[in-house]
Length: 358
Image (cartoon, rainbow, N blue to C red):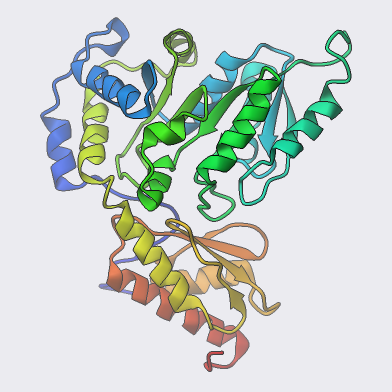
């Protein structure tokens, strides 16, 4: 591995700012955003509100804060929130729905992230025995995710989202979309961000994943909702001063790294194609930039495989007891994909004692 750059596929969050992005950050016009004086973050918020077809937008330090602000501002303590069973909000935000907003969670299943209207209706039947029953929590919010991390970057089809939203709104629920990687869905399908955002009352999108910015996410929604979120952001310590330096990186990413996500998708497919046929593993076809690798053979111990890959200069992450995840991004080129295929083939051969492919 010495002298060769590590192929880091652990996440699309591992990217480093490009020289051009660093210049944009250094040259950013800034002000005190707490006082409403930072023109660069204001430009970013105006632009993203327009892009999403929403009234207003709020820059936040992270996707987790954006999601948690949305839950908090759509609900009251004691309310019940419907979450998809493998969603980021449920699994990877430290129980924030309860800790930050005092809400209960009801988990619903999905088909690769797509929640069927019948599933929502069944969940509401379970949780709403009667509107005037003083014993029960009010169900006030449905959260969905697109693209879906745990389902391997799956794109939830627009019509499936619309169907779920229609059912939720029929019962008076607000809808929030965790769109951390919504950029990928847009590039892969050719459907504009505003069309995806139209299925929800609020949407969070992340700049520090495939777009390659070092920090930042955006929360979009109606003006009163964003005003409330701005106030809560201050309470939670998320309001920053000369934040235009970070907003400039996000604007640069939007201008220069958005459409190039198609390259990440192409490389993810190349990685999956290269891994198919390696004995002992199974690799589904990726929708976007996330490749899941199932360790089917019992001899393939997850931690040992990761350790051997690291020794060969390739980094992936564990994604369940018998599964690895690899994510393509702007710091991984075609040579890196070829090295990753070679490394995993070699590691599997070490464990299985054979180098023949199916």
